[in-house]
Image (cartoon, one colour):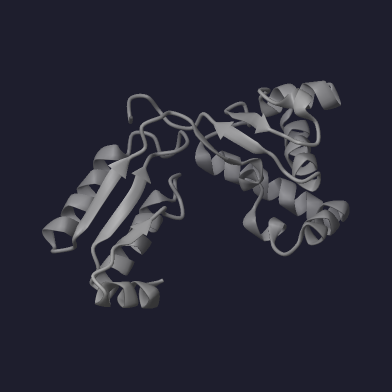
Length: 196
């Protein structure tokens, strides 16, 4: 990214970034953003900054202080704020990246193998815990082509409907199954009104 940004800088370009993480890993993602701006000597725009998940909530002052410090050091950076308490993207983002690598068939093989599936499930639980959550009640199915009857329902509600229980293991099963069937878009109620 730095190499590409250097080319853009040579043509009076701007580096605009949707940073890698807006969760408990936001500071690492901000450092990546600042590294590109610094090393490429390019004006940089941080696109729709937000703090997603309870473990990131309340860190707004620290985030802004880091950006102000970078500006004081001479980086030409700007940012705009994400103005909602919910976001929307693929439900599959709840699944570890490495589990979704390759083709849909590669993913299906992984979740069909009991050992690999168990590892994926454990990683999903760890991701939830790191974000300060106990379940996927904040995730609502927006569009699922395979079964539109679940559109508008939270992941726990779908787990209750499909598996008779909204326990975490059944919630994870819902997420894995939806991804196996082609995925779905979802709305994630992940931001805190006070931060906003």
